[in-house]
Image (tube, rainbow, N blue to C red):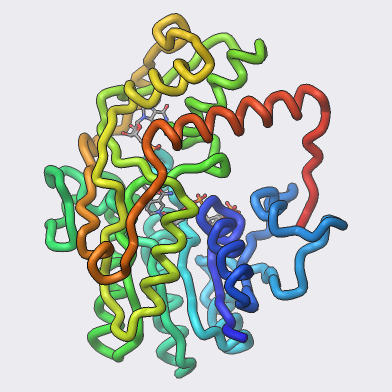
Length: 336
Ligand code: NDP
Ligand code: GDR
């Protein structure tokens, strides 16, 4: 039985990756942070019928800012594969807490790589790199596009990207970067723009919210479906040679188009409900990200299949159901 260690298990991607690895027969070790409230709700779908976690999923308390917790985990678990998905992942928030973001999203990658090197554990490493690293470099972006990050988050991800490349070149570690463009799902964090929109649409149509206030509606993003993107992560670590890959759809839409499509799904006109406020704008914005995933297609056999409208519909429908469940008092959170 192969063993995987996943940081950021409680996040959107972590929860889908855990499901995928369990389906593939892995013993999965995940990290979770101490929180004053339950923080494993995204893992509810992997729980058994009695609400407990399956025996081949083990959760450990760890923090990316705590070297000891990472070193001990790698030594104790001896994983075949490590997926580093944990991060302070919110771009706008990174302007508010830049040093913390540099530590948790940047320096922590060196902590993990150094723990691998020092322990001598024979493992493969996946780094969750981001299209935010391209920043202001115009699209289309591929593996050869120069980085020009536009936020502390983007700067931290560039550090992690190069640390991963460096440990591959210096020590021969099987370490790969997945340069993933935005990917969304019903499990997307509620403060990222897509989920903020679909949740607001659901709440407006269900009569529990009046308005939606957003920032820059002109930003262009390449939005894919998260479960397909975690499959690409796994495929990268199954290659004989470690490498770096762009994962994207190649199709771009503005935030305004996402808003329009989401309101259309429930037969409402977005202009009746949406306003903008500079409060949600960033000190420096990334105007347009459109990925060229031809290398991943060629070498990993990976292609996206969910369309833009398919993604919007899936997210709106899931949020409408969730708001109805909340109104009916059905959504009870458990700890996994
Ligand atoms: P989320 O924000 O949903 O999840 C982030 C995870 O990191 C959570 O499990 C969170 O824990 C954990 N985390 C945060 N801080 C720490 C810390 N100090 N120590 C340990 N764990 C921590 O992100 P996504 O799932 O969307 O993204 C996964 C990764 O991929 C991230 O690294 C992100 O930057 C990157 N990425 C994401 C893209 C996307 O479009 N989703 C695109 C490209 C890259 P908790 O639940 O307790 O907050
Ligand atoms: P992003 O995602 O910054 O691309 O980072 P986000 O959904 O936060 O923003 C996308 C675009 O929408 C604009 N926007 C707003 N954004 C938010 N969050 N809230 C608003 O009200 C709002 N109004 C307009 C933003 O300005 C931006 O242009 C995500 C994260 O998952 C990162 O971790 C990941 O690395 C990148 O995607 C790829």
